Length: 171
Length: 436
Image 1 (tube, rainbow over the protein chains, first blue to last red):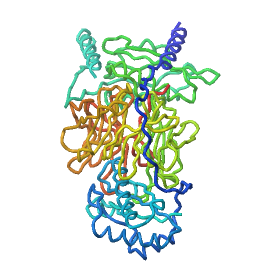
Image 2 (cartoon, rainbow over the protein chains, first blue to last red):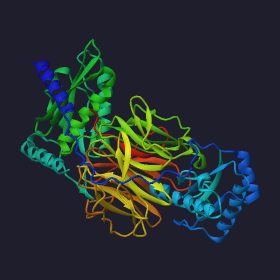
Image 3 (cartoon, each protein chain N blue to C red):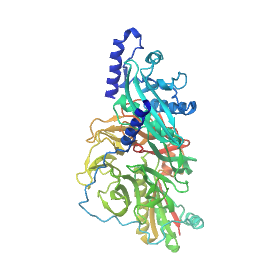
């Protein structure tokens, strides 16, 4: 008696579990716009490979591979511009390498916003290098958002070190 | 919530009617808007075969699930007597009244030689002495936890009036290592923390995994090749595919409710905009074109609208637009900044991260921006993800200093956030749809 009831219940349960409301339809697109052009690196190879010896040389000759930013800002101050000008001279003296400008944010922004902010910082540095004469095709940008802090504290000093754009020499 | 109160009320009324049985008093306490949890007996479940272990394990899962909802104080299976196989559908109510229970979950387990397990699940109103719900769940014996979750969902759903949500999974970013060299892997688990496994190896940093509406795919961002881009992964096979070919920086992806499209951000030239593309690939279609950072898009459940954040006004705020990018309008006006919105699967609320006073908190508001409520209070709570029934939000909480991140879930009706059990640190949770 109970068993037949249970079998009926089981069948019902399976039907109930399998039943799903139909997914909502997305109306068809009414406008077609081309995507933004992808990154400006022209090399066909997609993966970026670091060159540690060249990186050390950049730091030695240009003074630093890093520039810093104010909170939630992406403008370059005079010191950053001087550092980038020296980096540009090094890039033009070493025409065989490319650079990936990597933008970073401190931990006080949300994750996805900080990815956008890191890209703004990387782009600001890249545009300055281009203005100094580095061919755009040798430069690319990426953003690490707040995922790669160099200073681990939760204080003003650490945050200031983490709001940065780093010129990474790549093949 | 409303129906839980109604059920409690019904029980309370019948309690009065049966006063000579001296049932325990039932009180519908409302403390700070929170319903006092209902005492519910979850004894060990008898097996047709006499196997005691499986019925006890199933009862433990049901008990744990019900406790996690915040609506129940489960009694048992530890410290409470079981019942006979024959009493599974015919309880001795006085026993459970005397145990202090307002409700009883009972049942029995049958296992056949072919490896199938059937759990019969019954819910009784102990005070009124009547059955409230029954259902049978047949699973492969190895999936007995699924049957237990389904039973707990039946109980939760019947007594709360809400849709089930316990038989679900969670995908998240598992975090290990020091703050300045953190390893991030995608991990998947049942929403009670069991059946945990890693989906990526950790060589490339990964962020923001999100389920497809059927739960069979993930969309996420990975730094493989030192290029941050959005990928789609098949959960069963682990196969992954780049969403937008080329080197464009793509991030913040989410599926549309029908699973056919993916909305995401693409940044170039210092500008981030929102795009949508077929989940199978193709040419992205641009939806926003302001100079600001437009990111964190999330579809409404009917697919007609998208909520997102933008700093076009000078600070991060929430906006809603139509699916084609038209009619973009700001909805957040509460002071402070707003980020990472996600539209509830029920459509009635938008969860978000509110930034203010040096802290991040999780909150909800209506799709027009009305009725804003904050649900958490810590240094950094961010990245809300909805349970499929729209009653709970999972997020990650980051500790000041260490930067260690932990997953929590909180009811939209209030109460303390509940820490999700993960073997390592966790961020960016995504709650799956209800398992099939």
